[in-house]
Image 1: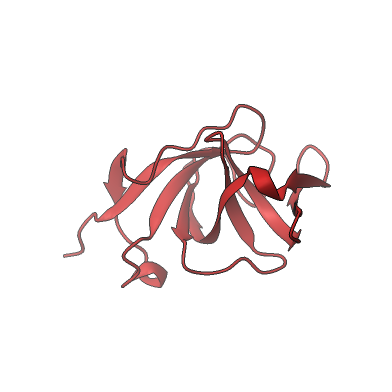
Image 2: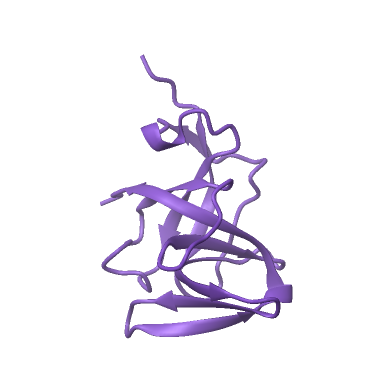
Length: 130
């Protein structure tokens, strides 16, 4: 029988006042999806907010493989140095700027200064939380 061994390490918002709980402090553990078998540092976060609807909705559980680099069009959780984190679509990255996209209430691109970015985590799947 599969074990609940994948840590859920916080929540990533689609809007302001996001919070990301440190990977070292799991809120709970869930079943590991097949695409994360063997990925020892994998984790999950809950989506909060509505800026990525209809792709992700509040309460969806997002599965993260921190070993995969972001590629154009993939979905990511971006953690900033002030412990904020956002779920967005990856557009591009340069030495000084990260460009992300959100879907709601209107599709728009959001620039973030590269020096604010602590980590970019690749989303590899999700479970609906509704």
